[in-house]
Image (cartoon, rainbow, N blue to C red):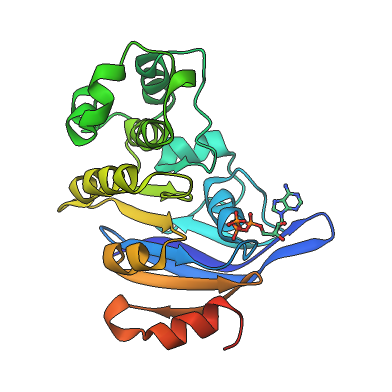
Length: 234
Ligand code: ATP
């Protein structure tokens, strides 16, 4: 069943067109990885879906319902949660406070504090520490945990491995494998590590200069085709 459908979305930053006529869909339980060079429009696309950036034209539907006019806050309540680039935790608040605030603003469901800590066990010893002192991997785990606390149907993760040590990337993806396991939640993951994206995704879309230029299941895509799309050569 289609969870998310994005139709002919165009987005601008001032005079710059960051996304041009992008259409995509995500099924319940599916993991879509977005790849593409710096500036391709990946973050803008996630932000448009989450309502953090207003698209110039096009529609965003969740469960068939038009979200286009809804604020970011209202979209969280209807089931879309974003773990943004830069993580944006409240640095003076403890991890527990960051997580509970997200729970209050989100929906009720299976993702409780206990379940988040079970999935991200690196967070357990940090509960009562201010988020401002966390390492990159801890911040990313906390940001994903915070998004889960809103009990989304669609989880949007920006730049999952960017700036993390190899060990931290392993840890975060081990937790994400647990998060996706058997659930109905759909995910869109922006991942700049191509190998990682191809091993984690059910489906991959490559953006180039604001357009979706390649789409497919990892097994059906060749490295050569991906490289061409990545550099805007296809
Ligand atoms: P990156 O990996 O660098 O984050 P991206 O694929 O996520 O790249 P976006 O961040 O969506 O790409 O940026 C798409 C285009 O829009 C780029 O040319 C970028 O410079 C521009 N852009 C993004 N945010 C803004 C903004 N707030 N103001 C002006 N231009 C912006």
